[in-house]
Image (cartoon, rainbow, N blue to C red; front, side):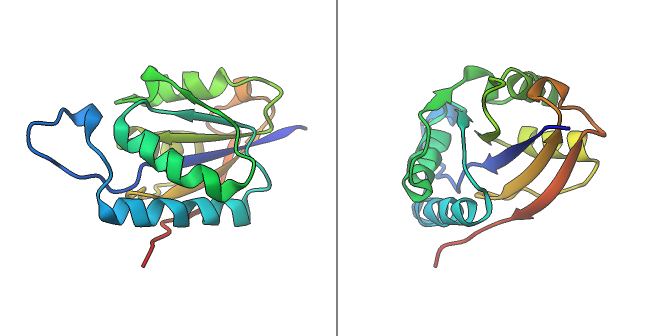
Amino acid sequence: MDSRRLVVVRHAKSAWPDDVPDEQRPLNPRGRRDAPVAGRWIRERVERVDAVVCSPATRTRQTWALIAPELGDAPAPVFDERVYAATVETLLAVVRGISADAGSMLLVGHNPGVSDLVFSLTGEHVELKTSAIAVLDVTGSWADAAPGRVRLVEHATPRGS
């Protein structure tokens, strides 16, 4: 049976500037150091990334912008409003809607949604701190993504120095 690779990434560490709405919070210096390290980790462990769906929040966009150059030939991202402050059900709808042509997908989002998604699909509690990555295998098509059909391959929280 066919399988797909889902790479779930929580945005890198963000700043909390006064009078800035949550959606517009930027990465802080640590986040700007960690995101490229996360990109290198993905490049070393994931064969390729065919599709990228990213929250439109500033910190997720900046995280993706720092990951993408590390991947080599990264695809153009889709900035999907549904990923910001998303529930598991919403994130699952995003995953299930990925083109059947994509063998792998990278999702850049926020907690608690991304951690809840990994737990819901795999039954494994994985703490997704900022810049954390969970690599999942989905048995079947994206539309088949459901508990019992997804396995946690590995996870990590790469950090810059």
